[in-house]
Amino acid sequence: MALKELQEKREQLAGQIKVLADKFNAAGNQWAGEDEKQWTELNTAYDENKKLLDAENKAIEDAVARKQAVDARLSEIENAGRDDGQIGRDGGSITKGPVNKPRFQPSDLSDPNGYNGENLTFALAGWLMNGSHLAVNISDKHAKAAQALNLSLSSPVFAFNLNRDWDGAKASAHRFRNALSGEDGTTGGYTKDQTLINNLELAMLAYGGMMQVSEIIRTATGEPLRWPTANDTTNTGRQVGENASHDLGTDPTFGSVMWNAYTFTSDIVKVPNELMTDSVFNLAVILGRMLGERLGRIQNTKYTTGSGAGTAKGITVCAFAGVTAASATAIAFDELIDLEHSLDPSRRSMPGVGYMFHDNILKALRKLKDGEGRYLWQSGANSGAPDTLNTYPYTINQDMASSIAASAITVLFGELPAYKIRQVGQIVLRRLDERFADTNQTGFLAIVRGDGNLLDAGDHPVKKLTQAA
Figure (cartoon, rainbow, N blue to C red):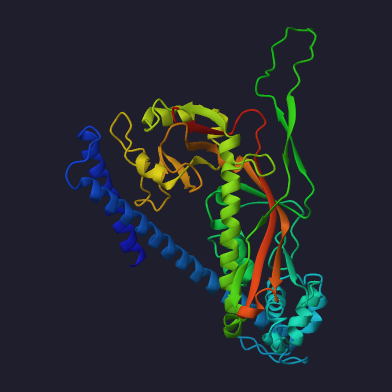
């Protein structure tokens, strides 16, 4: 369906969901007849519509990005043509100089900016083919690309940096960014250089929710990272009389939060050598997505529920107690209001403030109303904005509690980017050539190091709702 049809369908489904929820509440929280079945069907249809709408929006954004990439390439070729004796699109005159200069030539590879998407693509292709019967297809182009990156095609290990930009410019040692934004997100940056590297990173970032909303810190090395904190929220100044002395006040409370570098592995993915024969570049896309999803799953779990003892400290562990629900099996509207106001007002006004919960919890929260009979959950169909809960955006995290049960941490609320994910700026790929040779397969695995913790100076930027015991 076209974008307009999808938006209209979303609005229609949202209205039908609200009608059923009205009937449910009017009947004393009881379903009548086929209403519960219809409720489930409508919610399923709404979620499916949202996926289609998101895909349509992404397709539009990708098309725009591709158009921009084509225009940029044409402009580059035109400028190169003027420099090297070619005729530009505007019919410019021919000047003296070399003609038909290759887009990619060995002399370019010694450039300080050799760490770019094109070199990564050819070096990775050569590394994938090396050690198999496809090695005969390795060309000087692959070898030179690997040389520019200081990589060996014959090594069983292929390590690439996360803390570099694909355009060749080296990022700072401590690179801060929000997942799936800017050059890495829906603006189309991820459409450049579609290789294993990009697909692995994108899948790792997109899976589960934590890496979408947390702030990511990428460091070049894995030594412990200590972030100093200072809490001065309980101290105030004072008024003094004329010529009065100014006494020393109370010092702020100083502390620090530590991030280590724990190792996460995708485990081994076995790839039939026939697939490698078909297309090395297609293999890069498929393998990158598989390895990235595996790394994304384990990291999301640890960054959500990790104990902090020999592993990451998950957000549900380090979030501060906000509200304990009166019931073990239900969440009341007033309890969500209390949860919001358990957060300091200065925190509620910060970017990135919102809810986080499992999709099953969202299903239950969609039925809640305020005292005026208005639903807390609001569809963004009319404005094209994200859906909200009591005006705040929410993030689905399938590693949180999936049911409203005794002592379960069902809802988080707060400044979610205050949870910091530290990644060591390198992913290591390992190729196991001989281990599965008897089945004509090659094994691959990916390894990344990281840690997660909440940057809390004492004012508790994220609060949690816990069900009654």
